[in-house]
Image (cartoon, rainbow, N blue to C red; front, side):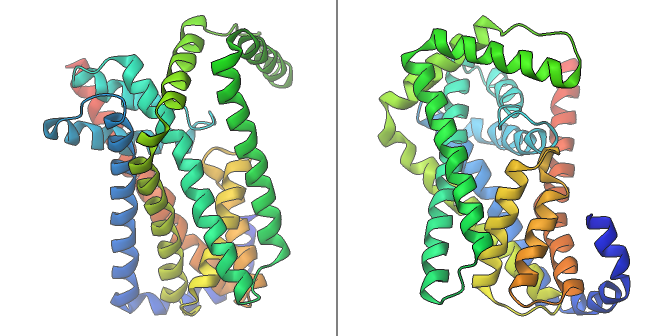
Length: 316
């Protein structure tokens, strides 16, 4: 769908690229991307520090694990758990216990949703005050709240009813095998116990979630700023409220989309929100593509390189 929109409006897209010669908005976009990366590193470092000691010498390895985790979560549909492999490797290289790394990672994954929720609620308040809140925004908010409720329910289930969680995981694997027409996989008891221990630790120390929660909020604020800069760079105007609305819709579409990383769904969601906000479709498509290059493809390339180099060092 994104390709079709880009092709049918190729003349508009060609015209809007002239505006990229203005270095101011490109620099703002680059600065927002650096802030976004810093937020992810601070999120994982803060979450690890909540469950174990993190020294200054550990930070470079944690940073590499964080950017690799972001990349893995972008290409694997796993509710954000694929990145645990990268963080576990980083923790192992720094002598951290896997259980502690898993607990820190679960805390990071939990506050990631909460950080986005804070930005979404604040944004909806601003948009509502200016009478800019649309039906698309409300739909995205309801869907995200439903997803958050499901994840909280799973965490509570892991703490209070581990056996029920094991049965639920088995049912999910059977459904997945039937849909994909593959052999049924059995739940890994060790991984299930790891999740239970991590959930217990997170629920026992809720106050320690505040620093990573602030970092998670920075990640989403930086995402809004990236879309805002991308929109201004292609001549779509510097409407921060519109960028916020489009970012929320794009993020929810990415989470619910069938393709890892929300490829296609996020682009359509952002372009639709911008178009509803009065931006011409060609300009909206150009802004969306520029935003996704900065927010998805560049981090994917950098994180993939971090993952490959880490594997090469382990092999050596």
